[in-house]
Image 1 (cartoon, one colour):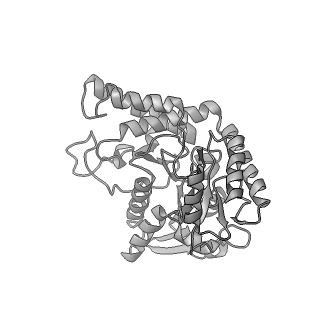
Image 2 (cartoon, helix red, strand yellow; image 1 turned 30 degrees about the vertical axis):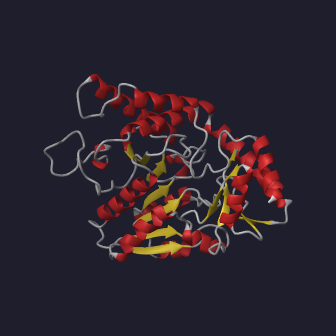
Image 3 (tube, helix red, strand yellow; image 1 turned 180 degrees about the horizontal axis):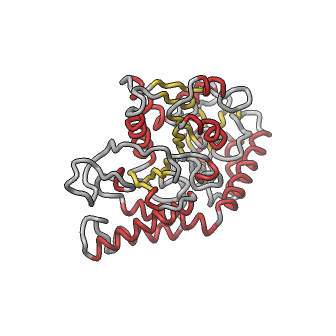
Length: 378
């Protein structure tokens, strides 16, 4: 089997991640922050270590600025809803700008807020130069800008660092969806210019499913309100969540095995050097592109983005049919709509979706060549 579905979840996992998860499930780990005994302390120390590793990966000095969630969708919902709630105390109906290349984990919370009349929403399409139309963006500067760091379809990215500098005089909060970017080069706070960054644990961070994170830059203009509340393990008699991070946004029992796996994934990435991993994945994508360009039966979408997945379509087969046929031959990729409806409409693939190929850190050149042979045989 050839696995080219790393944009959905990474495979395989590094051995240190697998060992840590096995130990967390089978070992002597309790509920962190809920008891004073050895099992609880061991779990709390492991969670703290994961915060430290991820903070280091993202270029943060304060590990408490890393908040753990149940996944990237939970992280984006908490970050978006909570930030809008905090902004509404300054502006009754804040203006929010996003793009047509966002995942439904961003779009649906924004549509919910718009329907409730809680935000004024503008969704921008790329201009001829590939960026966002600055005249529309600056005509009424937003209080919140929500953008993907890398499209889950084509790898399309916007210059969030430039946009952050451009909007700084207006106090705009920059919230980035890092689901397809964290774990690769260019996703740190220094490189992205974001104030708030959300990511899953099971993709680029090479952890297991069930965990995610929200991270905050040291210069974040404001913190989200807590929209998900419950036990925090501290400040028990306060009827509201604690005001400080990470407890402010961490209600309930944390997914300790998933968090430990994220920390170990971050440790692995740093030991292998992000730049080296990114360079390998770029070379593999280029190899895929070279082979597919020679085949007349495929359409390629935005192949010039060197990072992220590659989106293609067979000219005669719907994407889901093609994906099923390739799976029978031993090539695992994804067909369909990838939870990005507006991007599919913009690309012209809204009828049958598209095939997405996404190499990962453990993909080999030999596997890419075998995948090309199978794609040619379809």
